[in-house]
Amino acid sequence: MEIRKVTLIGLGAMGSFFAPRLAEGLGDGAFRVLAEGARKTRLETQGVTLNGVTYRFPIIEPSVKGDPADLIIMAVKDMGLDQAIMDIRNQVGPNTLILCVMNGTESEEKVAAVYGWEHVLYSYMRISIVMDQGIANFNPDGGFVHFGEKDNTVLSPRVLAVKEVFDLCKIPYVIDDDMLHGIWFKFMCNVGENMTCALLGIPFGVFRTDEHANWIRRSAMREVAAIAQKKGIDIGEREIEMQEKVIVRLPFENKPSTLQDLERGRKTEVDMFSGTVIRLGEELGIETPVNRVLYHGIKVHEAENERLKTVVK
Image (cartoon, rainbow, N blue to C red; front, side, top):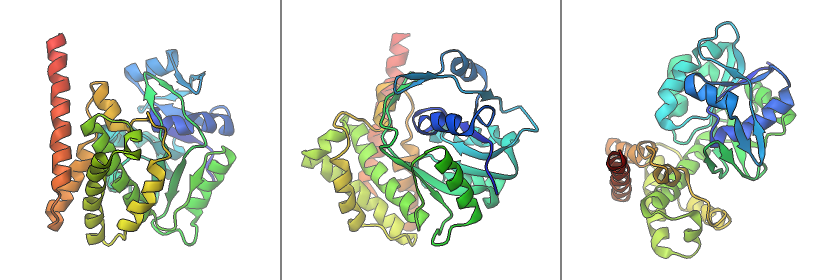
């Protein structure tokens, strides 16, 4: 199995981690961004500016047939996943692999329900990137994409094929022995940090000193851990303690995606984060009071943003 052609859908914060390196490493015609309509026009005319360099990557429209990719990287927001799953249909060939590097715990299942597990690998990202109006500045070596089969104690041909192209393109990666553990660990951190920052309107740096913010963060994480344990995924206090060392190293003023969305008047991924915790808690008989407060509080912020848009009009 060899990966020669890669398609990226979602040239936002996460997509910007891959795009320049894939374009340089693969060469002309082997990397393209899937887009149409106004987004396609904007990417072709304005491009994106990453670490001071403006890029205009080749664009392929979802309607184009007969030119499937060997690897598709899906880096969209949760609210765009259903449309993205439909948009990649002509990019999926008999041997195409799909990495869905979004947040959450269920994106792979949704993609596999349409295209089959023979096309899907698990993946997630561990990097902090802030993008605003097509501009992002970040340390390209300050994080990793994690990917693999559910169990990677022995690397499969599919994993080796992705590893080879990431090595070629100098994309930092980690292949977890246990991908579900990694995905749920990241989800637990995201729920605690992302939701708390969004509700309180604070950057990551506040967690260095404020025990009130940390109480909310850790309490939300423990609700996720209880759900994971019920599902047979062993995360808990050990992982919460591990994350304490990470959170204090993040740039003080960096803000998670949900807070960025609120500040820009956009819909957030709160349904994928605290909304999922609440739903799974109900299904498994686990109380999730902290995530309920986070969920409804962020929904209030969203509603206020919509009200302000109406007032401005």
